[in-house]
Figure (cartoon, rainbow, N blue to C red):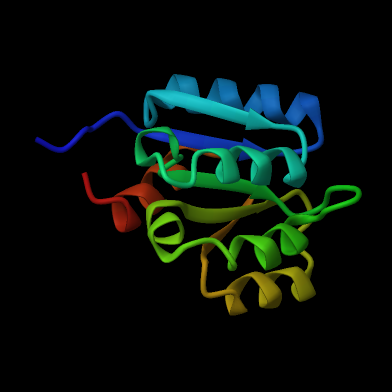
Length: 136
């Protein structure tokens, strides 16, 4: 039987945004578990550590674009080098507080990004994305 325990990973350098988005996700009941990371490096370390352990990998990653040191696009450059199995398991939506046209184009051009969402998250919009891409 397929394990229906859904995990989401939130990657955002802004602790307030992390708290708000975690709360929104908790209230939406779309996921059973939330992994929060304050940087792209922290998220990559987690993914590296659990690369061979599908149970611990997130089904969905919400990735902030604008972060210091490693922004969302830098994260994607490293992510694309992960094994195919991991990339197929972890769907990614990018988050942005300002929908900059360049960011939109860049996010849409990335084969691993399924959607660019505006902050703060809206449960309805998140649910639509999940229903479209995550098969239960």
